[in-house]
Amino acid sequence: MIYWQIFLAFFIPGILGYGGGPASIPLIENEVVDRYDWMTTQEFSEVLAAGNSLPGPIATKLAAYIGYAEGGVLGSLIGLFATVAPSIILMLVLMAVLLKYKDKPQVKNISIVVRPVIAVLLGVMTFQFTQDSMMNLNVIYSILLIIGSFLLLEKFKVHPALVIVCALAIGAVTGIYGIGVH
Image 1: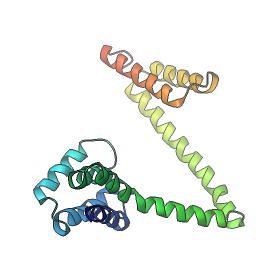
Image 2: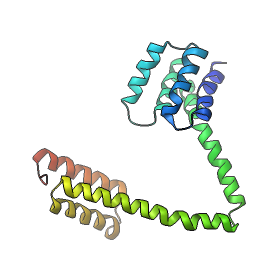
Image 3: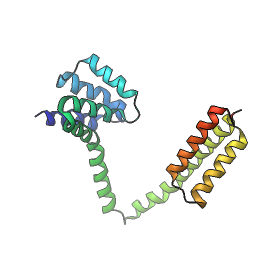
Image 4: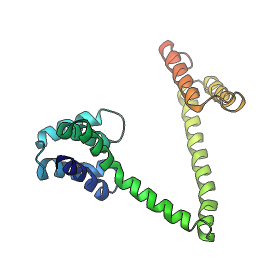
């Protein structure tokens, strides 16, 4: 019975918590503290504070911790699944609808409109990142990073994750020694 309760405690906030994890926090608290009495408000706030100090979505961290506390490893897995299940279900339903109507002109027009919008948004974001880099770092240093990243990605076909790790390492080394910073 505890596993079903863990599932419901995180599935219901996942369905009703429109707006993501932060919107789900009061709903999760209601389930965990008021409905199932698994912890006090003080304990929940401490778990929430600890969860906020870690990277990643807060709802999944709460589900993993509270699920583990109440049902062990299986409880943790059930809590995690229950948290993401509403999104998975909605994505599957939307994909089924999209696949059913993929040949309709309206659906094809959506992709014709969406692709350029995404390209423009990515271009604006890239411009803003470049502008911030030029303002906060040495211009020459920024240009070298841009050219180096481009060459690694396009000419040498290095995986993007490795290029990011290289850029982070270069930033760490130059930050320690004050190279490239105004």
